[in-house]
Structures are given as C-alpha cells and as structure tokens.
View (tube, rainbow, N blue to C red):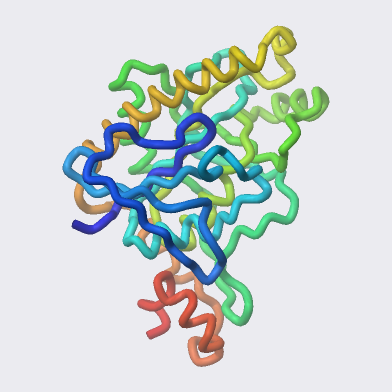
Length: 286
C-alpha cells in the first residue's frame, strides 16, 4: 500500500500512538539527512509516514532543521498530503491555551533560511499567495472540531527565527498588524511542500499567550509542558480523524503547482540537478 499521507509532529508530539504495522524508513536525500527515520504505519486503513520534526529527544533547534531533506523524504515515499502539528504562542486574547488554529496565511520573520529546492541552474517560482491547501485545511479543522477541541479557521502564523522568544516590542507589533499566532518552523515546510506539489496544512496548537499578555509572567515551564502534553493528545486524535476523512483523490491545485513555475529551458538544466530533483520535476523535464 502506498504512503500518501505524511504527518510532522512538533514540540510534544513525537509519535503517533495509534499507528499499527509499524516500520522505520531511513532515507538519504540530495539535501542531506532528514530529522530522523520516518515511522511508517497504518492508521484508519491508510498508510501514513510520521516524522518527528525536532528529532528523537527533541535535539534540533528550529534554525537547525533540514527542512529540504524532511519534505524531500516525504516526496520519495510518495506522500501527497502533509498534516503538520506545531506548538505556537497566541497573539490574540480570544485564542487561549489548548485552542487550535488552522492558519491560512504566513508572515516571514526568519533570517536567511533555505526554503527552496531550486537554484544551481534550475529557476522556478511557485505561486504562494495561498500557502495552505484549502481542501486539507477544511478536513483538518473539521477533525479538530469533531474531537471536541476549539478550532479557529484561518488566520496568520508569524514564523520567527528563534530560538529566543519575542521581545515585548515585537509581540506588540505583531498584534498591531493583526497577526494571530507565532511559531518558529512551519513557513519553510509550507514553501517546500508547495514546490514538491504536496498539500500542506498546519494545526497550530496554542501552548500559551505570547509575552504581550499581562498574565504572561505567571506562566511557568511546568504549565507549558502540561499544555504541550494535552495538546499532543488532542492533535493525535484530530489527525487520526482527519486521515480517516480524507477523500482518496485530491481536488485542489497543489498537485500541479510546478506546471507553469519552471522558468529554465529544459536543455539548459544541469544533468545533476535534473537527477537530484527527478522526484519533483521529472514529469516536467522528461
């Protein structure tokens, strides 16, 4: 059975308890090693590949993640849809801890992270006005609601560099811009998934209010860890529900994102680049 669904687990979500028929797959990519082995298994009668974003034991900082290898590995496995779970801080009073936001926009505050498969002789520019797959977002949000958690549909995820959290001035500025949640990892995943023609959605799990909130200083590490663990359980249930609800075939445009994006004349693309990127561009450059 082909693996068509990928799950990326963030802080607190290092496994998918309900996966059966488990096996590990260690992959090598032209971009180096992914965060760890992909855990392959069956969930709701469908084959799923799970990857712990920060590695076993949470070893990698957001800025140390090999985003290209992680997404490319999913492509090698045949994955067409990725559900990503990620801990975030809330920038709005009405998004308290334990709520889940399914954002439909990103705002980039990272500094020089590599977030494209292209270059080195092959130029491409994918459309990214709508960075989240609308079909997958609906299924994900419906699943969160179905398992009894409070969901917010849409909103903007500010992706910051980290590993430090925001200053108070930054947090207030993001709020004045109307941003909704803040995290450190999901934008690069979304960009690369689009280039790989993979549908992508984020389940943003609110752990605490960002430092703008007057009660921020009373939040302890212990409280955040408790929230993380509770969020992880909710996310597992929601993801399992979403996977079961996914239609067999995609009806979105994510699967043809590169159709008009490749700019370089095919005969001008270096042979090594063609070979390395064959899982992504092969159907366009053959």
